[in-house]
Image (cartoon, rainbow, N blue to C red; front, side, top):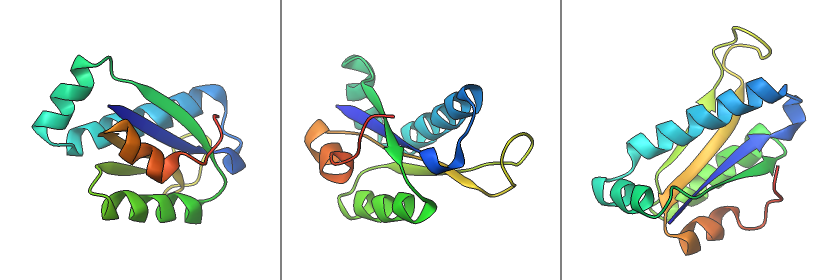
Length: 112
């Protein structure tokens, strides 16, 4: 079991902002997962990877791919209180799901 979080590198978020956006994405996708997937992921150590994304359009393409594969996912839109404009798409979480399925969606992306 695995979860992949794709954060937009093109936004040049500060480290704290990046961490917050990744956390928002991870928790939101977890909440959308089924009970069995949540339990399996938690029981297997909650494996996560943070990957580098290039653009808003890329995150939406990956979200579409995740949906077609039946994986839970969450897109984060920033509230705009600090570094980003309101509504800016900053991150996408895919999973928790089987490592094989998550890698089919995000496996070509580099680590952040």
